[in-house]
Figure 1 (cartoon, rainbow, N blue to C red):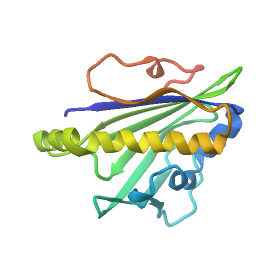
Figure 2: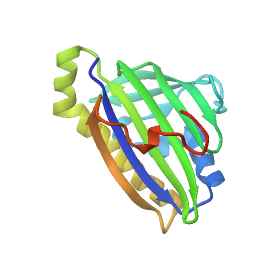
Figure 3: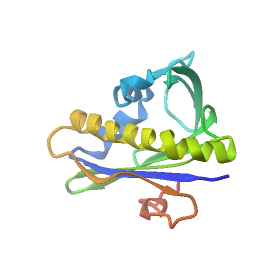
Length: 180
């Protein structure tokens, strides 16, 4: 499987507890996802974040409605959590959310390991459309988070995508004693 890695990092001038509170509420995803995706949580029960919880979403990609279900596979408040796709548009989706307290606030790191289905065709779709769209989604996300967290918020690493097998960045290392 041909994998890609999207990474980005920002500084929020807020306590780690405040930042984590925003991220652990899956209903906030709609606030930080571009409107053109038509993102909404459709889980039948109210979602309370914890390990092994499943979250169902509906998105629209190129006008096509898609069901997306993720499983929280790691949950270490307020430092990290991981969501992995069970059903959805990707052959692989593993999103690591890492939160590190600093004297200036909280560093928020995202690392998404993903792959598209359909082999060579999936790679072509990634090169032509999907890769740039995903990068733009995370640029939008950082902009909306900056609005939520206020003045002093800044990008430390703009969303970037690399191919699988390349050297992993420090966010894959041990973060405050938590392995994700």
